[in-house]
Amino acid sequence: MTSHMRKRSLPPRRFTKPSFSYLIEKKRDGGEFTQEEIRYIIDSTLDGEMPQHQLAALLMAIYFRHMSAQETAILTEEMMLSGEVIDLSHIAKPKIDNLLDGGVGDKTALVLVPLAMASGVVVPMMCGAEQEYAINTLDQLGAIPGFKGIQTIPHFVEQLGQIGGAIVAQVPDLAPADAKFYELRKDTGTIPSLP
Image (cartoon, rainbow, N blue to C red; front, side, top):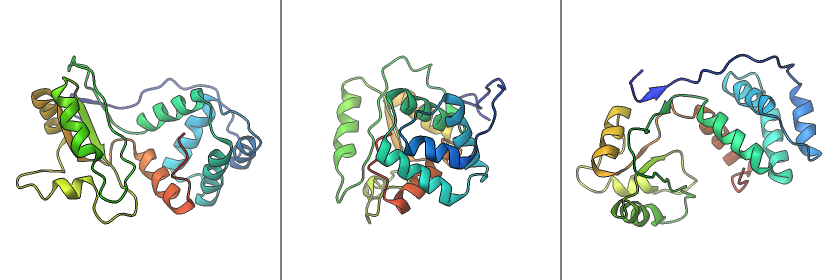
């Protein structure tokens, strides 16, 4: 583990595990998940305890019933903490990322990243599995001689510190829960769900 990464270390809590059916029904009926329930969903997804058909049902319930801002914030944090986390605190400048939504000929990142960097904002961008299009941002940039879309974490952090931006392929150790959710969301038609 490099000095720029850390593992999730949360104190154990007393938590009675609900059934997956209960969680699906709770969201189906408009209920709000607790932090412990969201953590349980993430952990159960990562270790394969939650069956795919129940996770698919849960994703569909979230799609139709949405999540509150607090649930969404907790889910985002739990997904981030599901794997390694890159520490960029030593870079004092503000940092942003551009969420790529795919699209035919997506050109947003190719314009936004250099503009943000020129404005003094650091752009640590990692591209995961994009939607069903033949050419994604990394494919487009791969046409530039010398472009390296796959980098080690130390090189990624070094590049951010030196030039203020990087567009690279997502590392499997970072947010593995997000990758699992995204693949199933593609299969269940729930990609448009903002939470």
